[in-house]
Length: 315
Image (tube, rainbow, N blue to C red):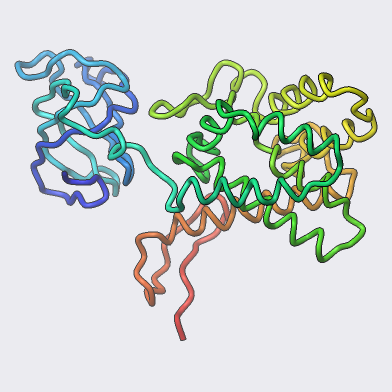
């Protein structure tokens, strides 16, 4: 199989990819064409069918696995595939695991480490709350598989788990460094801060915004999920519930970044820093993934940092 990240301009390929998006359109001259986004586990590739009515272009839909024959070209500095023939691939011709971006870390090991952090929570109400979610096999399966974003960071299978574990580990270190922080509250907020992503984003291979995601967003959805569950735990303290929900609502740190509230508790401040730190470090790691060690060439403007970026030298 030729992975997308290995394709080069001038090649003709005959491969199977996942059709992530399909958009019929017309040229300025009024001629119909179809824009596609092809995907495998190494990335995505813009593709065009310039003559959709021609012989050899079979019917297909978004999220179908497609056998495509076409030429790899370059357009505005990015690779593009001009498709000549296309057909739906049949089951057995492809392995779905080859077409989904996956965390570089082992999912089972990450979940085990997250559960070790959760098991150190001592407050009985927060302990029950975390057990109600993370002790549920259906929730566990969904949490392990889900992404943490559509594009910005951790946008892969296991991304939500990887990001949550990273944030929780940072929050544990903050609580050890700054003893005035309520460790149980901070860690609970960390493990739940992005739980709304389970309903904001659809499952792979689609990994796109749901209606609820578009209308409410993961912060509000997560707050609703926790509020509903806390109401079912007898005598759950209202003050503690309000503090936990505040941390969830404020975890983006600023109103302009999507938080309904700015942090007003020390734990909310710490959570917002941990969330931002883990997201930014992952964005850098993803930007550097194909840059050889010792290569200090500038990589260009990165929108997450609003700056040109590069790796540091080894010496």
